[in-house]
Length: 307
Image (tube, rainbow, N blue to C red):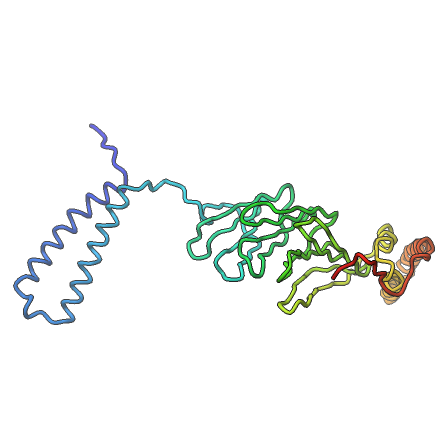
């Protein structure tokens, strides 16, 4: 017995041709003697049926000449999960963050992929399109790496020691605003210059947005966890004009912790918490004592500073 190797398209086409041809011929023969007396509704229904059958035959012809196994370069061919998505200002392009440490950019209407950007060793946490130019995109990773692509080409990279929580573009200038822990950074990627402003040591900026009238909107959260080895480190890194306020906020959190432990009415827990907070208090005082010469009420503006 000889096996005939025929693909599914050939078999479907062979079956449909015989079935449709007989059906069309039967419909055509039944319509011929009644063309003058058929009603308008019946004629329209028959015409639609014949049009659908002819369209199916045309589709089968196209399937015979095209490779069904040919991979298509679109979002449907991706097998990795998507956990972040952004769209350009005009809606033409959409960018997705994949779990395979890559960013895909594709046309929104056709799902046709136009670019794929690798992100290195760490996953992308945040990404953004330029508010007026769909061909400019930036993204930041959990490892602190920031990349800007212009016309599918890498225009600049920046490395920060902490994860990038949020980023956005300036509406009119070539500046990228990004947040890393308790800092907001203005980055001129064309000239590779950065301008940094600090916040309180116990704060984290998690959201940034610049409005069309050039107002900066921030979303800041206050952390509740102060490790004994980390409080002094945070106070040392804070801007000098915020040093005293940051110290007072740290002391306030320490007192809140003691008050919470006191409400338990457990002597053993209170003794442990007192020992811990006393050590933190000594650490804070030593840090402030080393930096007391830098304490000031407002930021120092140098002649080279620009808005």
